[in-house]
Length: 213
Image 1 (cartoon, rainbow, N blue to C red):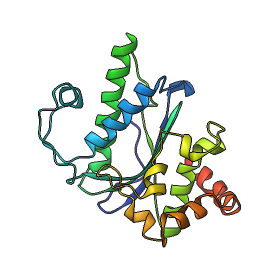
Image 2 (image 1 turned 30 degrees about the vertical axis):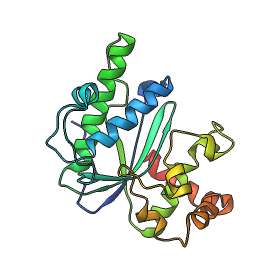
Image 3 (image 1 turned 90 degrees about the horizontal axis):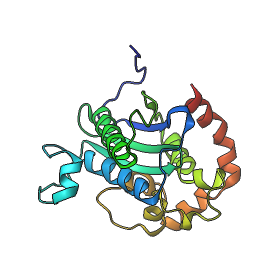
C-alpha cells in the first residue's frame, strides 16, 4: 500500500496537485472546470452536510462557508491537472477534502460521459510549505501556470484560477487571499511580484523538483 511521506498537520500549508491518469485531459468543458471548483469549495466546509450531488440539486441544506476544515489560498485548473495551495484547519482536513472532491468529480464525469474508471492518478501529491518565501513563490507558480503553458496570454482572461481574487481583492468566502496579500502593500504590488519573470525563473527549478519527487 502506498505510504504518504508528507504528514498533514493543523496550521500547515501544502501544495496539492494531481493529474489525469496517463496524462489524459480531466476537464473537457467549462462545465467540468466549474463543477470541480464547486466540489472543492463545498468539501472545504466543515461537516455535517450531505454529498455535493444532493446539495447541488436542492440547495436546501444550510451550510456555513465561514467554518472550514481547509482554507484554499490559491488554485489553478489546467486541462489535465490541477494545483491547490491550502492550509489545514481541522484534523484530517486535507485528506478528507481531496478524497471527497476527487470521488465526487469522478462520479460526476463518469455519469456525464457514461464511462467507468478513475479520472486522476490514485495518489495525489503534496508538498509541505516550509517558509514564507516558499509560500509566496508557490502562489506565483500556481497563478502563472496558464501563461507558462501557453494557454493564455493574459492572466485576466484565464477563468480557472484564483488570480482574479488577488487582482481585485474581491471578498469571497471560498478563497482566503489575506495569507498572501498580507505580505504586500496592495494587490498591485502583488501583481508586480507575480509578473516578475526573472524572480519566477529563479524559483521554478526548485518548485519543479519538488513536484517531480
